[in-house]
Image (cartoon, rainbow, N blue to C red; front, side):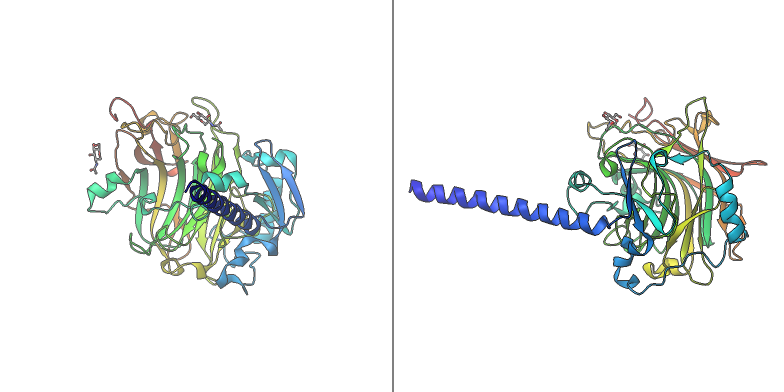
Length: 404
Ligand SMILES: *[C@@H]1O[C@H](CO)[C@@H](O)[C@H](O)[C@H]1NC(C)=O
Ligand SMILES: *[C@@H]1O[C@H](CO)[C@@H](O)[C@H](O)[C@H]1NC(C)=O
């Protein structure tokens, strides 16, 4: 009797070990898939390791539909009308004030791309391989036209955005960069541009780019440059940065997911980053540019369904996760953590907000609307002036006397 009980215990322990070992093996396998062999590795002061990976060995080419894809080294068209060769030269000459921290310790050479190395801890923090690098929720996108107001509030994701609807072939903005405080590690705060296509159901197509603070994703509170895409409303397809195959990078200077420096300070120096996403009218690929003339790469048209045509909505603004863990609203901040009313140097902004129209030209958006679930927690305001064109102020502190 006692002996058989002992056997059962031994058996259970062995089963547990086995499944633990299997999980460990799967993590290692996933790491090997994400972390491609590199020509060189650079240790960033923030603890990141940046691998310089040969451009043709990047994870994008693991995608079944990209196996025979011929890499495009430049877009066939640029909405800013700049000659690609002269653009390359001028971007080398101009001193962008915004940098990525890892630049302090080295560079990747041409023909390679800088990839932030995924560590075992990164995957373990996500709870599962499937969740790692994903938003996993349709509530990650603001649904300004939703008639289901209860649903809007239940999701836990909160937004303060400006948006336009129509037929768009790209979007641009210069975004103020801050370091919002995050109450707990499973929450995040981000500021970005969304290009959306399709309905807000299971088939939503989305391309997103901006900056974020996400302790679970990166293991720290740093402000990081990021991208996201999905072609099925955040279900099976898509991910942050290069954490799944999809986005094809051609640039050797900018690493997706790397820390941005310097950061704006309240009533002090302000820093911003420019992001332009546009559709190549010939190839149909969606290209992205960072700063002045740094063309980072593209999302191949074949990844998408609706976005193979055009985007039907563009959004600019912020998103946070409110897990309301203690029964109160989170204290996680959006933008600078201050409300739009405070204005420049205090509230976070998007300036020179533009869309790419049907004739592939950049222009100020018409009929800009705003949306926020709880304006007492995070709010948004729009405006226009000579120097800044169309602009928005957005953000807030989260929990406060009016947002209990
Ligand atoms: C969401 O919840 C807040 C707080 O309970 C409430 O003030 C707000 O009106 C709700 N918004 C919607 C759209 O139902
Ligand atoms: C991130 O910030 C929170 C407070 O907002 C702090 O408790 C935590 O220790 C920070 N984490 C790291 C890794 O610095």
